[in-house]
Image (tube, rainbow, N blue to C red; front, side):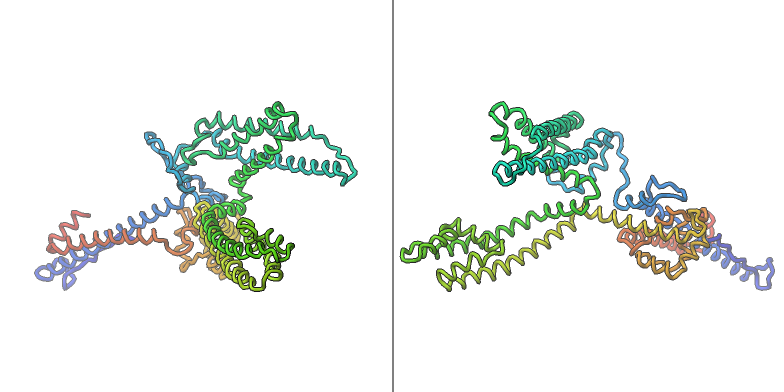
Length: 526
């Protein structure tokens, strides 16, 4: 807006030499006009300052340092920014970070790791890619163990005379493979201990490193199997069998691959959901256990009299004693009745061979527990699992990241469709022509971008060069996507309140002076 030009007031007859009351009225009117112009310029200046504050705030929220202002700017960096915070700059004299309290959430660990000093490349490799490589090694080792178990089974079939084909493989091959994998695991543990040092056992962000300690224990178990047990025993097949079963626990290390490789996102979400639902599962099992305990005790006491009856059929008494003779037997039978779905095989012999009145007891249990309670527990367990997964910060961040990348791919398609000359930038004519198309407006509504006035939108997205690059296009549309956020409303309310106070102060200052004094104040201010 241009500078306000005060109106020029002349005398009644149009003469500049007018005097008397007309000259005084004209002078006073001119003073008031200058006052009006000054107030208008003041308000314009305040609104410009307010607009500058808004632009700075938005730029801090959406601007990323790595975005280059070129026509071929990539969308990928913008997508990652939507779910990642800009790296904080830590002062040189910053105090060392304190260890996180026990039980800190994954989001807190992530935030603390972001504000700390960047780790050296070697340590970052040990904490990241090395886990992936070792997970692949574990999977290969597991495949060899499966092959060994299968070939051993074929050998046992031949020894038992089930098959006549003799095995053609040599057990020494698997012994050599076991030694090779053992050496790899030893090198992995030693590398982690040497590079991570104290962080190998305890990390300030993660706490006690159970997985590293678990790997060390498994290495010791493998050493005992390969080198110590053969010396203590004549053969390796006796004592080492149990240790070989324990080594199967090493498969849990493959979860580290799931944690770091993005292709297993669905499996990672499922594992986290199961871990989050452990509490609901435990209480559900407690409830069902109490119900099974009560019914097992009742049915056991009821059938023990029939089992002790010497006049009853011996075969029936043995069958009842097999399933309901003691509390432990009755409890295991009720576990089968509740969870296996084979309750007719355990209930029908009692109803047909002992007494039909037991049908009332069993049918009541089946109806109340197997049909009603199990379904209620399942529904609550599912609800708790979904709620835990929805409240997980890491899962939410991953979901927002995928949504941002998908949104940017759609914006890229829209930008390329609007860029008719293919130079990687949109002129004002290209932008207005594309935005006025009904199909484009419908597509923007589909993306939750509602633009009421297309004209000012180009000026908002443009940085002053008259062209809109792909970075400016995506960044600007992301800002206006969806409804106004609470932060926007709070900032707007704060700035408006501050502006209102300043306008009221100017008004009080102006209204409290005489016309001549007001003019002097205006001249001094300008």
